Length: 164
Image 1 (cartoon, rainbow, N blue to C red):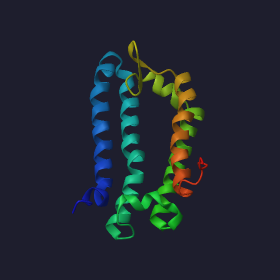
Image 2 (cartoon, rainbow, N blue to C red; image 1 turned 90 degrees about the vertical axis):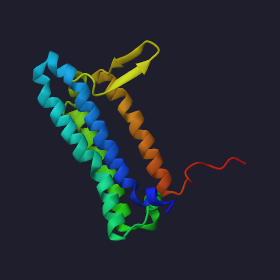
Image 3 (tube, helix red, strand yellow; image 1 turned 45 degrees about the horizontal axis):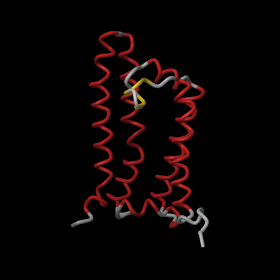
């Protein structure tokens, strides 16, 4: 019973994605009031966030509901070659690839810059909007964190040399 979160954690992640989309929709209203032409862009972004952002969690849910996986922990061991876990990891790679394509080749960074409130950066002087240059500079750093985590999962953490 104490592992219920790990059996149904995918529902929590879907809920968090939905709540984030609702918050973003609420925050975007003040920007749309000033620039109504941005409304369609915000709506497309939020729908995309709900669709693409939930793909990995739906895969986890399918695995758990069909009995092919039993908890979130199995997704940390792709080397076990469980088909659902492999599909989950493949979905991450595809989503990352689509993100790179959108940000660098389809004007995604410029879209984010032109739609205030989608992403902000916090500093000593408060929160400021990200520029397209900021996004193009920092996205690889954020992506690298995910790549390192996935590599660690595939190698059981053997990537980091032992310190004697």
